[in-house]
Length: 270
Image (cartoon, rainbow, N blue to C red; front, side, top):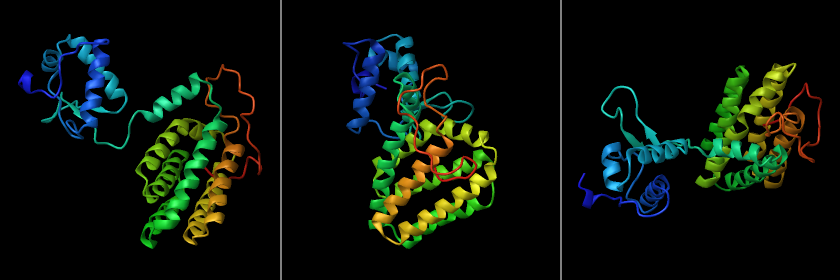
């Protein structure tokens, strides 16, 4: 690639790797880089930016951790190359999980945010989703009824709520919902394994999801918003009350506990 024709420029300010990250960000924002674009090799990038190869390597690793870039490994024509990610997954969920721990954000705060997102999704979905799209939610519920391990159930439950967010038509809502779910996924799985009767909990949750589809399909907005809020808060208060997002040695923040509505052996929602 001709240095003069490159979409990047030599680094002049900041620490070298930070300037590289900034230039990649700007190139994505103004459309010079898009999903699937293959970046030049590390040696060539170092020449373009006018920095050392370790500086380029550090910037690429940070961008890969954020999910902006994907390093292709193994065999094939793209092996060894770095490509702008076109995948839906990114590093936001991991960063949210880490900052929740570092800043000692109680799980109840994340739940409040999730309830707000879910209520927004429900309102928007009621106004725009077709019967065929509601059928997609029903199909996930049918898969839930087939019986599964905690891992498989968590996967299906996540798919249900992400589908609901997608049906809202708001792509930012779907993105935030996915990352918020990823941030608390480990706590949810731990809680499922800790239950004395996971199968009973699973069956309850399946019925809860089926009811959610029914009430949302009815287009009764007030009832649907109440249902989704109760569904989430009851689950967290019953099953996840003892699963803070903080490190195990950190003191539990005041006010982190949520209300308990049913015995821990039954179930509600996630």
